[in-house]
Image 1: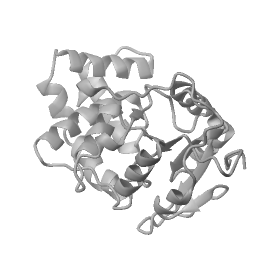
Image 2: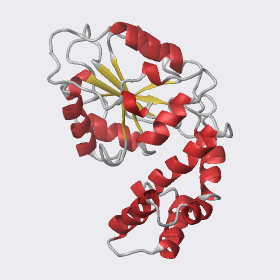
Image 3: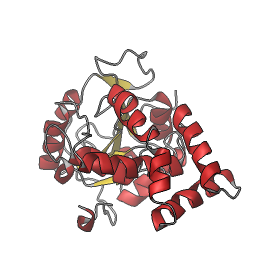
Image 4: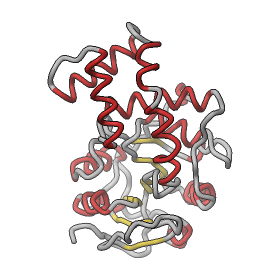
Length: 260
């Protein structure tokens, strides 16, 4: 397969780890059984409550951009509901879901599920100087809310930045991983992508990244093939810290303290 890659030098660990969310750092069932239904039943009320505002216009414009045809509120809502039912990775839907979830987090009705091995893994990588990033189809705002409201507390200080469909591109697209590598200022071989989806790992591997597949014990899907596989993040902590042979070039993160 085009996917699995390892570092050029086994003594040099990844300079940055990029993590998926659902099925990798958090429960797939929490997303499908809690977050998605919560947003789905609030699509119409949200559009009605925000009618005429800038966020409302942004959503309609995003639906128009996705379809290539002008949309009013009614037609946009019909499409958003169809996309939600089919779990379409459309930026307009992901943005609106994030806005709705933000209200749920603020009201204490929602929390972000994180497996117990995740906080210590992030702390370990931080102590080693390894960059820690999230890449999800969910919006950057939704990702921040997820990690800011967990049973383990606010984990955002342990993360350096976030990528989504609008900042990196589709997760099964090779060019998305090339874009992330360029943004981080590291050679692809010095980056590790961890996900539960084979097509995403294949794309990252084709872009030259190191890849590791995750299949959690509570996940009944078939194992991902063609990539190193783990059942938690813990086995990854035995890898060496980032090597010093390849200096990062103008590395920066997407985290903005003003957004906290």
